[in-house]
Image (cartoon, protein in one colour):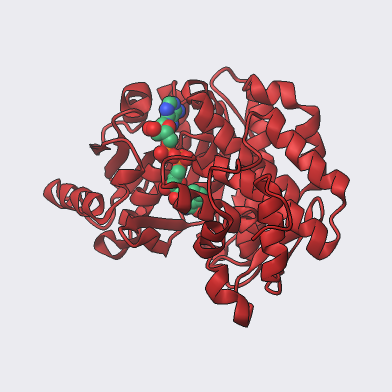
Length: 382
Ligand SMILES: NC(=O)c1ccc[n+]([C@@H]2O[C@H](COP(=O)([O-])OP(=O)(O)OC[C@H]3O[C@@H](n4cnc5c(N)ncnc54)[C@H](O)[C@@H]3O)[C@@H](O)[C@H]2O)c1
């Protein structure tokens, strides 16, 4: 980890590296000055080789943070594409619109794209970068907590298809990630809490001391203290970077990043995308995975209770109500009804906090029991 001076000369910004050989890149974390063009220019200057830059952002973020980024880019040709806000625009149509915009503005292979926004902007911009002129540089300036601790790191880029989320995409790493804690001040509370769900996940899958630290720093987390946020982002990114460095293309261990997500994706899909934020569905999914972990790999009841209590303390949902979704629907949405016979559905389960395994031998009866319990249904009715 390295430390660099911020605009005031004090040592606040810190950086860590995602180690991927010649595609390694830094993640800068702290008060990086997205509100302060001079400091931002100091970070961006060495990252941009050419004279062309395109900033991809959206109509919510642009009025808040576009101006300092523009100023930091100096005398280059800088073009800005503003998407409408929302997951509904992470599509092939938006991909085509951005690509056409770049071609019309005569961007060439030495251009650099800058993703200024949350995971939607980052995923779309990354996919454009992966494919425009067979691949151009891109820099992530994530503006949601979820994007800072998760989606901007690791190189998964994608757009959605009517048949499913993230169905069209590529693994393509950015040149750098600039995670500025100060931009989180304007993030709506629900979006902030949803990002915290992914933060808690790193404690469960990789870093038990971080889990305890989160329990001990609940107040600072809720208050969005800049010092606390810097630690949260650094430690989350350190876990993600470690996992990604070991398995960039998810042929094995990277799947542990999906802890709680098998349940979470089913909840999102079944309830209809947009009803639950991704992080909210993952929070419920992590509790379900913990209950399954108790039965399947010996997680202590007390550790599952700690997870539930931490998520609850952070303002996240931890259970589905009886009437929210059906057990059969969940089983179907998870694909368990089809996959259980050949045992292919994988669950990431915890043996201890900070120690997870990937299991493909969970029985349907055990899964149904956990879902019934989590929905407040009696155990003995089908
Ligand atoms: N690539 C990956 O590895 C990966 C991992 C997890 C999630 N994702 C993807 O990320 C997306 C979700 O990302 P998200 O949660 O950041 O949602 P988002 O990008 O939709 O942002 C959430 C909302 O917050 C607004 N916003 C963003 N920054 C703000 C700020 N600083 N102040 C005020 N408002 C702000 C956005 O305009 C939007 O309305 C999904 O498409 C998901 O598939 C990708």
